[in-house]
Length: 220
Image 1 (spheres, rainbow, N blue to C red):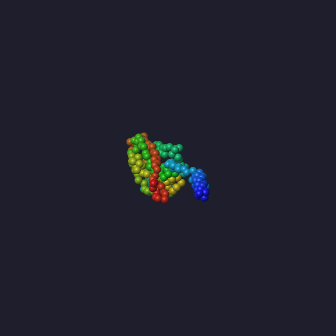
Image 2: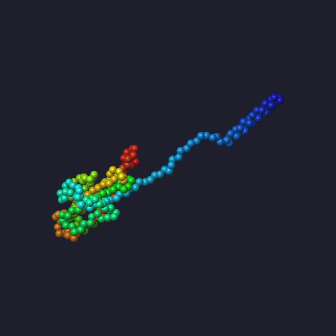
Image 3: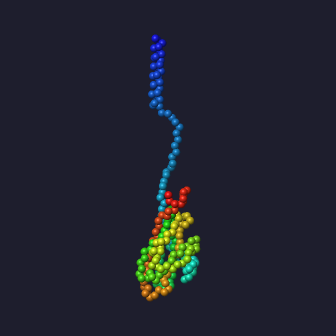
């Protein structure tokens, strides 16, 4: 009997010890190896759309196919910023047969590709039907295309249908140049004396759906 009671006491003591150990383990924090990686300041910045226009006065240099009135049209080296010299054309005392020309350059000063076109608002003071015009594109220092004498009363409609792409600043194709030719018809009669013509021109730019990535060259 004594031995049996002693065994029971021993088993009871062992069981109690196990419960105490288990209770202590529940409140114990285990130490494990850990690691972490943190990315620095992540930023998304929107691109910008910004076009500028410059022009130069006539003074020689370009041969224009089909323009027999004066084969060579030249321009001075000094450029004028449209924001400072607002009016591109200021002609006075014109007469039949007179011709004018301006070399106009539109540049993309932004970080996004753009597509541009010119918007003309015409104010005819009776001289419009005696005038003609044409736009001749210039690429790599040479004229592209052939001169076509166009009626001045088609100026706004013609310009609205021409769109040209401009790539982002400091990339190939970030500017476009063209010659604006204009003149008074040689057959213009006395009915046009003291008449005038004016036009406001605005360069309209919109984001061009061009993008190069690992997939294609279209916006995703």
